[in-house]
Every structure is written in structure tokens, then in C-alpha cells.
Image (cartoon, rainbow, N blue to C red; front, side, top):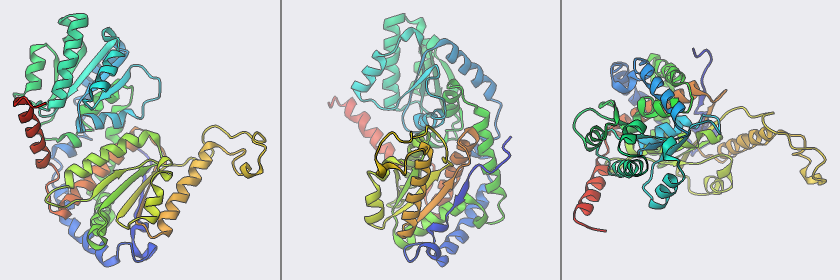
Length: 430
């Protein structure tokens, strides 16, 4: 049960009233909010939409928990085969797992030959399990990964080892991955055919890896349900955080041509979340010559690689900083160790004190520089909080798509590239 707010969502430093002429004017903000109303109303009437039904769904959890327990008990390493949403969702959730917990999870989300060879070469295959995830069942990269892993298992352990060590998640109906799984007696879980890969993080695609990692699958759903219920119960778009976020993003694009949106969490465990958001926003909105470009950054690291550009470069960006309280957290810096008076400001401080100061300094510098800034502040980072963040940004993306006049659920340009790649291989091209 979630008893306190999961996060605070504050867009006040995106508005001209706070940061000056480069912020969003009151008129433009109000227009975008009014335009968002029908899209919010559509969501209110779409509670049976498969995506919106995920937070309240629990019928599949017992089966997933049983399968996850078998993977935890039987394997030292688990490799997730997939790309895009089939990998990023699970990676995002699993980042909350404590370091060093067994089994170790590996996300083989690329087909770089050296990376694949190194990963497989470092595994004891007798103690390794595999998850092959592709909604369509026809993703070339995932099929290639799966075939290579089947071959490695057969060569090392025999034909029977494949079915004992692999599970496929694929949409119902004929597909290459489903046929491959059936041929090698690999267990199959159905991917919901009505949920696109980049929106599937709260389904088996993300939850099964998270459960294998020992995380609370029900907690993710509970947090997502809180955000969904609050959003759909909001009396107006101005009272709905995802609608507010969408209105600000689209309003800044229209009024000031801010074509880049930077998501910068101050938490290593949210690095995967930033990459998940990057795909969600880019693939959902980048259509018909429109959209804004998402950029993933990491605080405090990117204060030293990107902040110069953010503060003194072109005014074409909106920023979202995700922070949580850090004062007094972590190891203390010893007093009297440096012998240098210039380091006195650090001595006796917890490492979290430095991070807290840098979070605040970056946010204030952006706002004072008239750079539109949204602040998301988490009281804590756990399964409900992350589930809530995921649902917030899925809803925000859907509403932003409505404001931009595009369908958030397709990716026609990507499909063209996939077809060309298959054609080149079929023609014998290198």
C-alpha cells in the first residue's frame, strides 16, 4: 500500500513568470492545457486499454513469481535477449536490485560480435538461464542472439538443455521466435499483443527479469496505479501532472522552438530509466517531421561534460532533473586528513552532502540562467516510486502525442530500416 506522495512534480521554473522571457508564457501554457483536456478525457474513457490495465493486473504474477524462483534457484547468471523496449524495461526495473545479488542479470541488447562472444565466453552454461523477448517474434537481432545461445547450449550440454534453460516472451500467433521456441521445447509466455514494446515495462517483459532479481513486482504495479488513478481522477488538465508535463514540453516547442528535452537523474539506479525514457519519447513522438529530441544525462557526472553547453550554449532545451534527499547520506569525508585549508568545506561532510549541494546548484543555475527546468523530487527510490515514474512518463508521452497530432504507438520509419536490413542479408550483402 502506498501511503505518501511518490514524488513532487514542479514545472514552475519552466514558466516565464519565474525565469523570464525564455520561459513559457502564461497564454501559451493555458492554450496547451486547454488542448490537452480532450486527450485526458480520452484516457479517462479508456481504462480498458491494455496499457492502462497493467497496474491493476495481478492474475499473471503467481506464475511469473514461480518461474522467477526457478531461475533464481537454478542459475548463477541469467541473460535477457532482446532489444529496445524488450530490454530497456527490464534493465530499468532491475537497476533497483542490490549489487552482488545472485543470479547476475545480463542484458544482451546489442549484437556487437565482440560483446556477445565475451559475455557467452564468461558464462558457465550449465548454471545459466536465458530469456528471449520479442513482441513481434520477428526481430532480427533477437532471433540472431537466440539462435547463437541455442547453439552454444546444444554444443556444451546437449539438445535437452535448451528447453530447461530458456523462456521466450512473444505475442500470440505465428512468428519465427514462437516456431523456434516450439521446435526446441522452450517455454513460451504470451506478450500482450495490444501493448507495444516500449510501453511494456510493467508487463512480463519487465517484471519477469525484475522478479528474478528479487524485486517486488507488486510494488511496481502499486506505484503505477497511484499515478494512473490520480491522473485520471484530476478534474482538469492543470491538476494532472502528466498533462502538465506534456503541455509544458509542447508549449515550449511551439513558442520557443525548444526541440531537445534533457532528462537528468541524480541517481545511478535511474541511468537505465533515462535510456528507457529516451526511447519512449523519441519513438512515440518523432513522426511526420515533428517531435522533440530526448537526451539522457546523469548527475553529477554530466555537470562536467554537458553543463557548459546547457548553461551557455543554444537556448533550445528543456531540462528535467530527478533528485531525492541526500543530506547526511553515505560515507563521511575524514576531518584533518588533507592538511589543506582549501578543502575545509569538504571535511566532516557526508558524500551525500556534496551531492545534495550539487543537485541544488545545478537546478538553481539553470533556472537563474533562464533555462526551462522541471524538478521531480523523490522522497525515496523503491519499487512503487519507480513504477509511478514509469506510468507518469507513459501518460505524458501519450498526451504529448495528442498535442502534436501523432499516433504514439507506431514506428513506421523503424520498420523500413528493419526490412532493408533483412533484404540486404537475403541478397548476400556483407
